[in-house]
Amino acid sequence: MKIYTLTDMNLLFPEKEIFLRLGGNVFKTVLPEKAAHEYRRSALRAFELCHPCGRWCVFPAVRVDDGILLSDGTLIPGKDFAGRNEEITALWCGAVTVGTAVVNARDNCQSVAESAIFDAVASECADLAMDHLHRVAAAELLRLGMFMAARRYSPGYGDMPLSIQKFFYERLNLRDLGLELTEQDFFQPEKSVTAFAGIIQEKHYEQR
Image 1 (cartoon, one colour):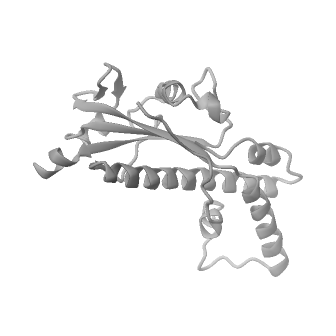
Image 2: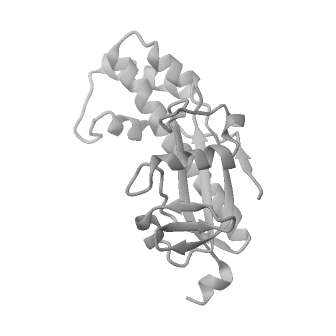
C-alpha cells in the first residue's frame, strides 16, 4: 500500500466562502468601509497561518450489506455509504489538516469577532484542502484506470461512526503530519478533515 503525501497545496484565498460561512450574503451584506478593511485584514492574517497538508491511499475493497470490506478483512461500517458504492473495487482514504498555528492564534484573539473570523478561515481552508487532495488523487488514479467517486463520506456523518477516525490515524500514519487522536476520537489540531470515496476499476466500469 502506497501512501501519498501533499505538503505544498498553494490554496487560493477563499474570500467569498469565508464570508458565507460567517453568515454574510455576498449580494446583500454590505460592510462599512472600515469594518470591511478590518475583516479582510483579519481573514488574510488567518489564511497566512494555515499550512495545509494531507495524505491519501487506496485499499482493495468490496461492498457488503453493512459497509465496505477491505481486502485485509477490515470493515468500514456504514450502510448508507455502502449503498451508494454498490460496484466498488477499492476505497480511497484521505486526511488533511491546516496545522496548529491558526488554531492557536484563534484561541488568543483579542475579540470574539476576530476569533470567529479565524475559526471560519481555518474551517474553510480545511475543506478546501480536502477538495484539493481529492482532485489530485482522482487525477492520479484516473491515469491508473481507476475512477473515483465525486462524493465523499466522513466519520461522524450519517451512520458512519466517529470511531473510524482511528483507522485513518493508524493507516495513514497521521502522527507524522502532527495529528493526535483524542480518547473521544477527535483529531488535534482541530481543523483536520478525513474522508472516504469509492473507486471503480476501468474494466469493471466498462462492463456496467
